[in-house]
Amino acid sequence: MTEKKCAENNIAIPPVRKRKPSVLIDEAAQSQYHYQTKEEQERITSFYPLLDSLITGIDQRFESCDIVTAVGKLLSLEIPKVDIEILANKLKVSVD
Image (tube, rainbow, N blue to C red; front, side, top):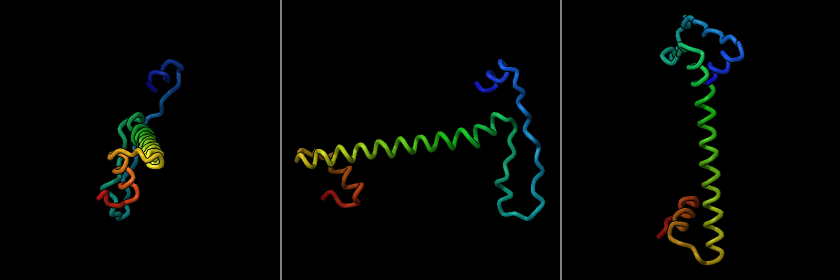
């Protein structure tokens, strides 16, 4: 998609610079990663972390919605077992 847009607008995509491995003794030398293409570099350094933070945010939002709904049902004294389990998990207490 990005490459297509760049081609349509005559934007040159710079090649990935070949980097030399570190000559220093480093325990993290196994984790030095060199990307083959610019697309791969952007996917790993930008897209995946962004996607991960979006999914985490969505999970937290829906967890909050479930908790608010469960508390609302608790206050009206009409709380089903599923909502009791949600509150028990959040408060780290036993359902029994």
